[in-house]
Each structure stands twice: as C-alpha cells, then as structure tokens.
Image: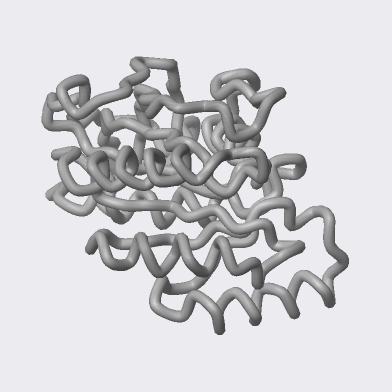
Amino acid sequence: MAEKRNSNTENTKFHIFSSAYFRSVVERAQYVNDGKKEIAFIGRSNVGKSSLINSLCSRRGLAMVSRDPGKTRTINYFAIQSRSMDKEGTGHRQDWYLVDLPGYGFARTSQKSKDSWSSFIAEYIKFSPGLVLLCLLIDLRHPGLPIDAKAYEWLQGLGLPIQIVCTKSDKLGTQEKQKNLREVKRLFSGSGHPVAYSAISHNGRDDLLHIIEQYVCGDES
C-alpha cells in the first residue's frame, strides 16, 4: 500500500508502527495462509527472545516473558504493520507477521520433547507459505555453545535464509563484545553479518530492522 507523506514530520526510515498478538498454533492445519510474509525468531530458552521482540516492536508486554523457560509449545504469530519511504518520498505500508517459535535446549526437557520440538519446528519451516527469514538468536556472552552450533547446522539444512542476532550485548564491555562478535562471525560464517542487540538500550534495533526491511519490502516497486 502506498501513501504520500510529509518526510519532514514522518519517520523516513523503515519502522514498525503497529503490533498485536494474532494467533497461536500447534499444528500445520492452523498455519496462517493469507499471503503475508513472515519473519520468524528462534533461539535457546532464556536467550531473551521475548524481550527482543518487545524491543523491536517498541511495545512492552507484546511477547510475554516466560517464568518457566522451555515450556512454551506453541508457534505465536504477531500481526505487524511497518512503513518505509522510497526515493521519491512515497510512503509504503507493509503488513506481515513476526513469528515467535518455541525455544530449544532447556535442561529439564526430555529427549522425547526435544525430538517433538524438532519435528514441530521443521514442519513449520518447511510448510509455512509466508516464511522468508529465520532470525537465530545467540546469547553474545556465550557465542560458542554446542547447542547453538547444532541448531544452526540443522536450520541451514532446511534451506531458508538465516540471520544471526546476538542478544544481551549490553551485558558486555566494548572489547569483550567485539571479541565475541568476531567469534560469532567465525562460528556462523554462512549467515552474513551478525547483529549485536540490546533489548534494554535498543542498540541494534535499527540494524535488525534494516535487514528485515530487505525481506519484507523486497518486491516493492
């Protein structure tokens, strides 16, 4: 949808201006299939996924932070409206979904539950018609966890673009942050440039939104 806007008073960068919970699903028959694009977020339990989603959408409490990590077993859709401005000064509105996938790797999860999780997520990734990008969240304080490397390798095999997002960057000093980012680049070399993100200060939000813009607005004329 295109709209002419005054660039002096409106934010000219790609930004999210509306977000709302839409639906939770537990099986393929419930997937949303209305032609809108989907950006999915996945990561280890306790990686800070809900906090990042709330920060990205500038809406506290949109994604609820679980008091019992590893127990969420639903795929949660959030209806997003964003806006961008083209070179001619014409504003474009986009309607898409941010998808919150269940976390992996919680210590008290049984092997049976882990296998069930893998099948559940793999089915969504393979058969969700609107999915265009997976954002894999990595705790920047712990860039070399084997479980994250295993998840990355598994997700790569499913054939979708992957963007690494490093959470909790505010917990590190400048030197350690840069050192760990270099390690992330080395370990996850096939996924482009990682984004360091702080859900507290919102550092990294513009970088992540710029990447999302390329997938959400890629077919706009």
